[in-house]
Amino acid sequence: MSTLFLPLLHHILKRCDHSCEDGFGDCNSIKIVGRNKNSAFLYQNGMIIQDVCEILKSLTESDYLKGPEPDHQNKDDQFYVYRKVYEGLEIYIKLKCKTISDDLNDDQERIIIISFHESTPLVE
Image (cartoon, rainbow, N blue to C red; front, top):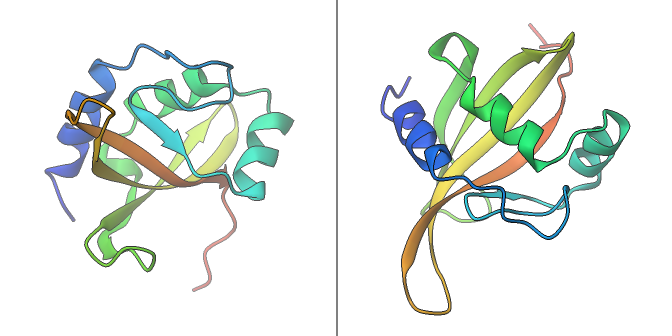
């Protein structure tokens, strides 16, 4: 288990101002990968980017499942997996931190959420 990831995650979220064009878009600190399962879960549960941010801020080591694991899409990245119970729902959260350059070539750490949906039972 990596004890360094959560402090980094929480540090990035401190500067989150939810500056996004709509409630379901990305903000300056978070990008949610546009997978149908993620979008459907957020829509069905009436969640917007601010809710996602608050859930991420509440993650603790006891929510940790696994990681770091290599990202199959980008071999230089590693992802982490958490399960969080929020308002009676168990949410599966797979995410990573990535440095992204903006139009001014300023590097900024962002949280990339690969999965954010209802958890499925673990297979033993």
